[in-house]
Amino acid sequence: MVAVSLQASGVLRSIYVCLANRPQGTPIIYVNYNYRLGPLGFPQGQEADNRGQLNLRVRDVLTALEWVQQNIGLFGGDKTKVTIFGESAGAMLTNLVLLNASISNFAWAAISESGSASSPVIYNASTRESTWEYFVAGTPGCESVAGTQDTFDCLQAANSSAIYQGFVEAYELAIEDMAFYPALDGPSGAILPDLPTRLWAKGQFATIPFISGTNLDEGTLGLSTTTNFTDENIKNYIQTTYSAFPPYLSDTILDRLLELYPDDPSLGSPYGTGNETFGLPVGWKRVASMTGDLTFDAQRRTWTQTAAQAGVKAYGYQFTQNSSMGSAELGVHHASEIDFVYGQLNSSSEPASSILLSEMMVDYWVSFATSLDPNDGLGTSRPSWPQYTPENEVLLQLNGDNTTVIPDDYRKEAIEFLRDNADAFHR
Image (cartoon, rainbow, N blue to C red; front, top):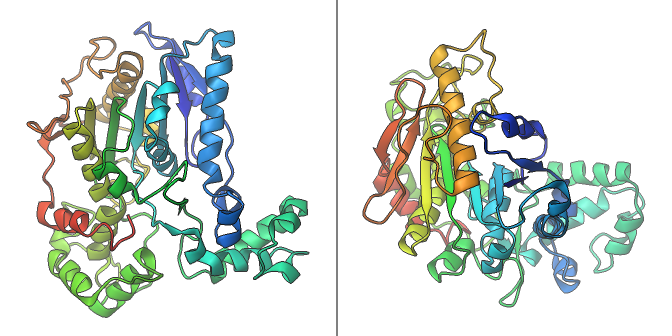
């Protein structure tokens, strides 16, 4: 079996090879590769569109998968049993390539941890023209071509230090915190002809089996701890983060969002912490709940339900295990499952229940990658993980003290509202 990692930059690499020697007797060949980041991976603006140079990071993924098909046999791998997987940006990439049905020629399964194709905010390339101009203007030697439709030649001649300087400048000046995202590449586009939620609704996606899940508190990590999130500040933050360019979110949507996520710390994230606010600003837990659902949980639920309704073999999870290394105010935050999946916990500082959970997660992941079923009966004894179906919309709660099956209905009304307004949030 071959595992191709589409991991986010900076995330653990290559240690997945340790799984090859697990006692199940199901060896894995691990493949990792580099892909272009920031403006090099996701160019913006009309020139990039005209040149057909959009979504290059996704093309890098496809090129890597083509290489695997052509060469993995030389390493003893089976090209018919390739599982693509990733976390965060890697999960988003995994799901973006699944929007093309032909990916079934390159992979037989997928695993996505905390990220979906609809997690990024997506526009036409020309919408983020100013973002591209900031990048070009900030790249030494290319200032004179900023604002023109002739920037690529200069950028291709620039060295890496200059590109990095332009990248930093763009992030400082851009309206959005995340300045470089995928772009729509037209009705005939090979990568993203329409918003992901629209493509899902049309049935335009690969039907390979997958695992998709999120962590309990996806919205806490990276959220500003210096902003007082009053109602007005929340509206401004949500507008800037999820609809910085026209068409903007309406007051009706923003007002309803505030109603569905009330100013009650006991309902906010980190969940299950009651009225404790950890000394954080007003409304912090409230916004953490909103952003976690907007970026991760609503998108995961939409994708899993849509695929299951189409007959795709799907498995969903929610990771709820706190780590001894974590901060109480972050809860079970984005990326906190990674050490568990890779078997990288420190046995001297983590409780036995966490170590056991990690062993189970490794075995679930390996079992699925090698057999398309997380319940192969090999390795650690673990609860059965039921398939997610229209008749049985359930998740496996991954928790060292209580790994069990739960219904996929948390924050049902709020998440349904986000899903109903996916277009408004550019999903």
